[in-house]
Image (cartoon, rainbow, N blue to C red):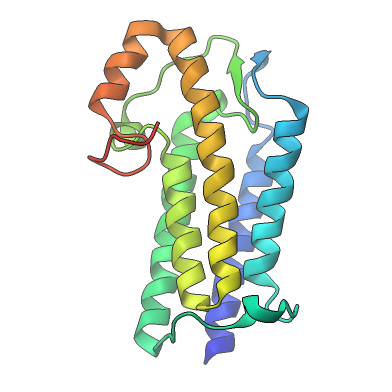
Amino acid sequence: MRILYFSLLAFLWLFYLLYWWVKTRDVKETEQVHESVVSQLIRFVSMISAGVLLIFQNISLGVLDSQFIKSSTISCWIGVALTAVGLLFSVWTRNYLGENWSQAVTIKKDHQLITSGPYSIVRHPIYTGLLLAIIVSAIVIGEWRGIVAVLLVFGVLLYKLRVEEKWMRVKFGDAYELYAKRVAAFIPHFNKIG
């Protein structure tokens, strides 16, 4: 049964990555890039490493293969469902953001401050959905490799969030300040991060 859960998780993640790859072409022209190539490369390598840790269970990693939690059938099904919810929330956000989305921290031509839809729940809903999905996937897998994957993803997203916040404040000024006071960065109603 464990193979079924891992297969479902792998399918969800691969479908998510394929969707993301297809949508990378649907963006506005970039006006300014505010993230270095080195930062983008570190983020890319970290995200790929996290994916390898989660998806490729047949790669032996010594102590990281040890379980930190034993999963039951019901917790695995709940985990797969919550992973899907997190990924769908991220996809909904990407669609809602439309052409304003970018892989790197950039200001787009005619960039708009979006504060409705998923952006009325949290300021960085793509990150929220992604973090929910990766945390739950790590719990379903139940091995220390999943915790390392979560830490990698959280670290790069937190760094990118801080860079984005800086430039959003420069671009949108008081409007962004008011938005940031009203809406939390990652977790609804928890406005301490960012």
